[in-house]
Amino acid sequence: MESSVKLLLLLSCLGASAQFCEIPPANSNLVVRVTQQLLGWMDRQSPLELNPSIYVGLRLSKQPSQDQDDFYLNSLMIHYQQSFSSLALEHQPKPSMGQLALYLLAVRGGCRDIDTRKGSMLVTQLKYYLEEEKHRIGHNHEGYPLTSYYQYSLSILALCIHNKKVPGHVVEKLLHAAEHNLFLHGSQFSVDTAAMASLTFSCLKDSGLNPGLASRISRASKHLRNKILEEETPEGYFGNIYSSPLALQALMAAPLPESEQACLRVGGALLKGLQAGAFQNPIPLSQLLPVLHHKTYLDLIQLDCNDKRVLDPLEEDATTPQTQELRNIRVSLRVQGEFETMFLHDEQYFVPEGSTLEEVLIKAQEEGRFMFGTQTTLSGPFLTSVMGISPRERQYWQLLRAPDTPLQQGIANYKPQDGETILLRLASW
Image (cartoon, rainbow, N blue to C red; front, side, top):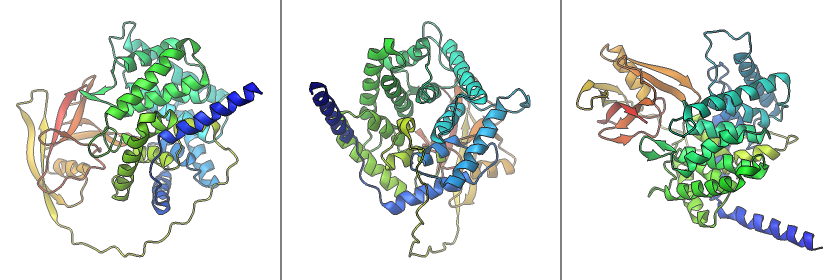
């Protein structure tokens, strides 16, 4: 009898704590539009555009339909299994550690067995990536991951969700980084990384896979969630609009009493941004959609594999969009190398209003006085070179609105305004 009472009290406490991070209810039409936006990306079937993050976000919102699900997941499985098979072409780039981790989350979302020969091969590959990164960080924690602590966290999370034990010495590297506030992008605290690490610690804590580190995991998780709360901006975001969905997932997975009002504010701000069309990139959108359904990555562990998935029809908008005459705008493009006083490029370009930054760069290259190169990633094209200069290790091409405002979107999503000056700066992190 006493044990039953304790269980009821525990469940009551868990139910109460779940209320500490709720967001305002989203308009059903808005949720359907977001869902269809992600479903549209699922139609892109080239290997470089297959995106497990899209699939995970949709599965946590009980989408896509069964036929779409089977087709897309099978395409993902074929691509990732072939990429790491012995028959893979030598020049064919292998998916990164983070991409492989997202793929394992997608496999769990699709309720597929990971304990097959090919599945076990990919689990082993992900563990090998983590061991490599652990050695890069070093015994005394003086180094850094070759990728990032974000990908490091995501990889441990993917293994944890599949109930695969991660060696304590690998987890300990992430704990040390969390405890010493090493989740930085440049000089700024990285809310995305803190949120992913917090989700990882929540999974490890609940799984009991690393009992010897349990107390440190609990402390680090709470520390990171408090850090996220401290990063709330006057505009109502955790860090920025694109880091907020993952931050909300972290707070939903392990709520704090003091997070209640912050979640309402940030959730409201996200809904306004979503309504205004701020989300055009599949990665943050696929992290936001589960939040709109009050889900997190941790819900993959107990996903309903027998659910019936049929998308509600989108209600037609009664208003007819008005056509507007396109006009040209002026955008200045500057390139700054390692020596901050010297501009490698400083020109003005006229492009149609509504052009993306990538289209500005293409226009500049076509006129023959500018060069750039990109690499395709799950988040869109990533700048790999500017004016023939490729960043060295721990360097990257930073995108700024002059003089020093970092852009929150990539080149394929940011749309410069008339008269803006865009600065491409070779920066270190």
